Amino acid sequence: MPFIVYSCVTADGGVDWRSGSYDTLDALYDELRKRGEQIDRFYELPEAVDHLVSAMRGRLRPAQVVEFCNYLSLYVQGGLDLQTALADLVQGTRESSVKYTAEQIRRDLLNGVSLSQAMERSRQFPEVAVSMASIGEASGNLAQMLGDAAAYIGRIEEIKSASLRAVIYPAFTLGMMLITGLFWMLMVVPKLANVYRSMDVELPLATRTLISMSDFASSGWPWLIAAAGLIPVSYSLARRQRDLRQVFDRIAWGAPIFGNVVRNAQEAFFFQYLALVYKAGVPITEAISGLIGTTQNRHFRSRIRRIPEHLRIGLSLREAFQRCNIFSPLDIRMVAIGEQTGALDAQLAKLSTIYMQRVQAAVELLTKAIEPLLMVVMGAFFAFFVVAMLGPIYSLIANMMSSMGGQ
Image (cartoon, rainbow, N blue to C red; front, side, top):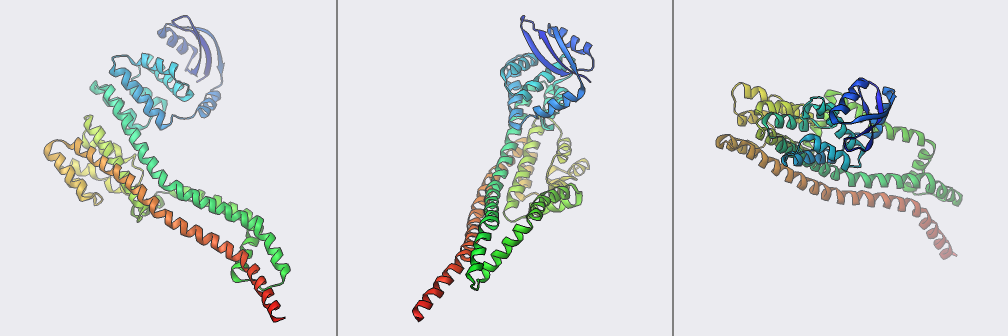
């Protein structure tokens, strides 16, 4: 599939430069003809150029996906067609990835492809956005479904951002401590060690330990760098192993403080998705079946995997939840109320809101719990350096004072 860079005369008489991959040159001519445009000049490049340009352009960020879906939703709700919406989006954005995606979808629509199929073919949208667009097309409520998809993606990003905030502060603090410690070990301690050796005095245990650590760091720094790089690589490779990832996710789920963030984030994601697709008319069994594959925590996934089977044999959603042994009594009670009153989507949405609030609270609690611990660690870290470095000096001064007093 060649990559073609071309200029064309638009319907209003202007000249526009574009690019894209086409099966044949005739496909490009057909597309322009449908738009009422004419090709001016073109340059046919190898397919590898398309891969290079795509890599440089990058994928749509979640915020851009939200804006994209909201943009289309507003236009469709206002009675305008998708071609007009996409054309205005192309003209109004400066983001190359958004512009290219809009052009690609617009081209697919001209060729008779549905919006949901065009979104899927672009590989720029999450599965939930494609599914909601498909539901909207089938139900005739595309504007509402696109808006709901944007709201859902935005909320999931809030959950991810909240979880990330809980990790950034301790990671930054520990990283700075490591950098400071290495600087002292490699640059400061060796010079002071030479001074202390020339003093010909017995060094305290803390000083001897620090000098030994500095000697090891100075001679074995390549091994330290290799170990620092090997740890995250090993962890990443281990998580690709199904059994090991199951173990890691189980530990994360049950962790004392950090586990609260993991559990609440996963359940907020779970209930938000169910509320969204069930409200759109998707059967609850089908909704949960589609959700299982997108659940990140393997431990949670293993517990909810059999819910569709329980529903197919005639159990209620409440009974299926009870058999999972992972949902709280509040979850089960609210689901039961939703089933009894016929307002299951509303109850699922309430559960999503509850867990979203719990995520925010868990992040704040985690931050507050880590701060004093980090202060203690940092205090002990710097106290060790101060005692180890200044101890010999105080010992030397004390010896000198005692010698002078003896004279």
